[in-house]
Image 1 (tube, one colour):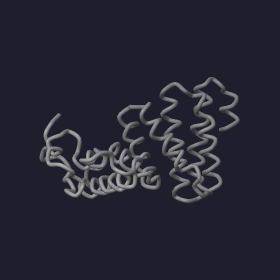
Image 2 (tube, rainbow, N blue to C red):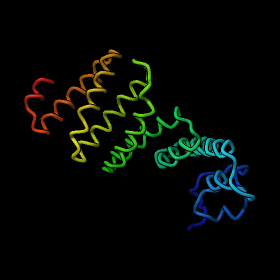
Image 3 (tube, rainbow, N blue to C red):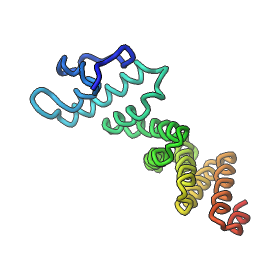
Length: 193
């Protein structure tokens, strides 16, 4: 464990149940969300605590949010705010992909796609679902799991076409052809292209 340092995000003192938490590695705001002096916190209080912790982190570290993407995913998930969570999941997937952490990227993209699946065609949420599907497909290809990629790219292509997004549809189509080629199915690659 380490003590809080100058580089740690500021703490909303209303979330700190005891001064001793300031000396712990776990952020005081985070610790306060999970326990109270006389037992576990009620669910509604925990949800609000996670929401406040995420909002505080977004405000306090606005210029360094990429450092805290995974923590923000954790808090928004625990706050049960799917609308806020899904955007952070996409960012976490991109961050993991950039670090060549393909298994982690695939997991983040899969969770994001799941939260966006009910988006209406042509909406920004629908485009984000397509981005999550493409990101997951790319991670799966890099993991050697090409057999799982075709349905994802087919869905991404269908969403893009339904929304009239020719660029996204073309991207999904190109990736689909590449996936068939990598799998050794050159006839399917030619049909798609």
